[in-house]
Image 1 (cartoon, rainbow, N blue to C red):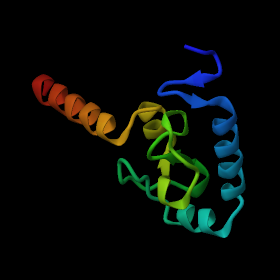
Image 2 (tube, rainbow, N blue to C red):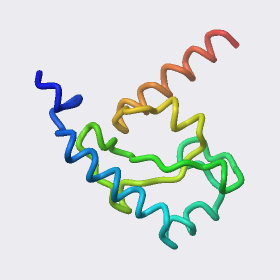
Image 3 (cartoon, rainbow, N blue to C red):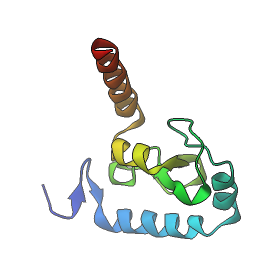
Image 4 (tube, helix red, strand yellow):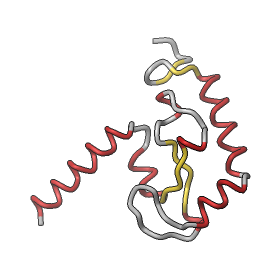
Length: 105
């Protein structure tokens, strides 16, 4: 595989372009309104706005865009755990984790 591609063949230039769009969105009133809810999209817990991060539902490195329909506010822990997973991979991960907790409970 060529070094200028990640995961499913997304070019580095496209990734840079989408990350630039995300940086601009972070300064928008739309993003400030998202943060003001204080709710993590994934775990549903409440956090101060400064503790929420921007996450792409479909990761940029996997072909996602920095559009309002693909961006959510989430806590740092969920964002770190989700990493570059696709939504279906994230759901599978959560099912496995909750299954392990039940087995150990």
